[in-house]
Image (cartoon, rainbow, N blue to C red; front, side, top):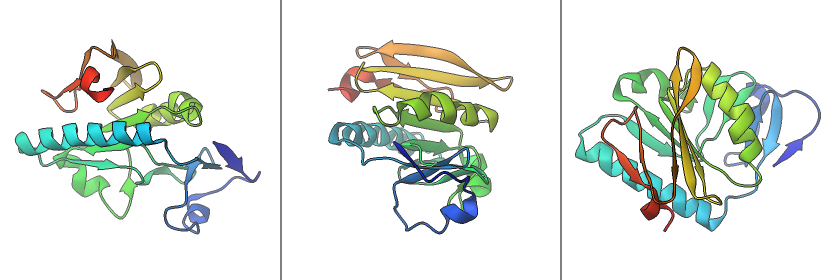
Length: 183
């Protein structure tokens, strides 16, 4: 991931970019990402299918969206997580032309070019702005970590290897079979 330029950028600057430009605004820095690998996209599609099927089966009126989608946290932080979930109660508040605030759940699939941002800077902002749950998928190590926000801090709730199953608090009853995910 390369940082473009040296000045601090704002949401107004970000809005001047072409639609679909591979940038995120992280702490005022305009950060460009290379396109994800095919395996990254396969994992993203599999996760979306599992979550979407669960939402339809459970008649949940929440919504799961996948990248690219802007999540605006403040004037200097606009991220594009791999997947997000917004509960039915929070859809009217957050779901606008872009996502305006912290979704209930954010899923990031690590890649060599984004891991630092996903594990450090973005994670800290997700915590600060009140994302309830953060799922990190590591396709190289074939594992997953689930963090849940408690009293304003992320606490690791679960860490599973490729033969494990992940459960999420924000989507109670959903089981993500990592063996099927990483197949």
